[in-house]
Length: 231
Image (tube, rainbow, N blue to C red; front, side):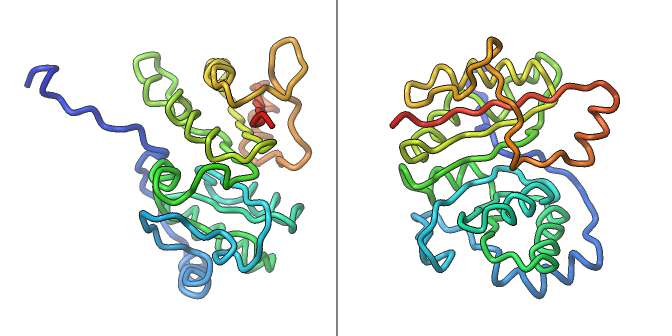
């Protein structure tokens, strides 16, 4: 097959991983899934109807095991949180946290976040976006697989309401630098940091996860990048 005949696969917001769903997570799927997991439908999502109220909505792309999601939703009950995650153990873990903590301001889409952005979220519909520790694709030849690149940055910027924010975090410095470059090139976005290197202090609402704490103890860095949409 020649290069001209090769099809280029679009970048997805996830990498397929195999994980085991625990008994507790399976119970959470059964008891809470119907209420908190939304079906993917390629049409605009009515956020007010989805959450049963009109409130600022924050999208989280790839929430992992849901530790940060549940923590932030607890701190900010006045906001709605829409989480995209395709891995069953992570979805089950967040459902379990929702049940244990009595959270009502979270909804889950078990689907690729890029397609959700394309087909379910309209322009200026989000108060914020969280992208915490996306796959860094360390090897240079794999950098093109990184999620946060110009096309996605443009989509995210368009979905933010004026004054809305985009908060990214990574423990891989080259990716952090790329984040600054990509987001800095978006005309709708402005960096909120006033530091010389362009990185933000970790906002109080983002918790230190067990993984992050372990890395910090080993001397690993973590970089937060926070941009907002121009008014």
